[in-house]
Image (tube, rainbow, N blue to C red):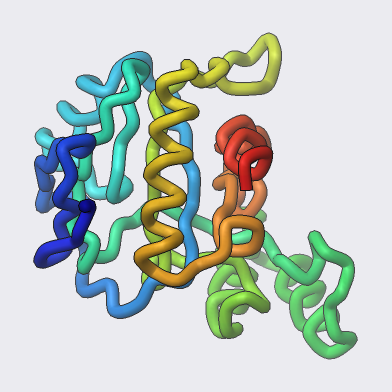
Length: 210
């Protein structure tokens, strides 16, 4: 039986190796899971970056062979989400006042685009979930090894081992934290200002078996 002991997943399917550099404060609640792609060729390259002191990262890493690494304690925040997209704009259901505030921030004069979208992201973070997308302080991140391919504008197709193991891990975490697969699991590219395709292949596979 799989259990969590002091923030560590105890299961023979998971190798635990915690990297302090990617842990940032206490994770007091979990309301969502975000699926990422590494844009790197191997799990080893990601683990070496963590070992070298990289600050960004996620709680889990799934290699091409399907091996699951837990890289951060489940009681600690990881910086894995980044700048949020606006959920109500994507879903076409913004309240009038909120839409006007967002529009004003996006078109504020005298600021670069990067500064403006960061301000919008901070505006979004003030909303309760699920009126906004997941944030670092309330979510778990799962990285899945795979390179971005410019000629297709998509990531490498995940291996069958990656798909199976990622689905297993997501189902396990959803059960432990009382989440819902269809509404609390997200592809990173759909919620943050990243490559739009990031995580979508994984999410489609997980949804197909939900």
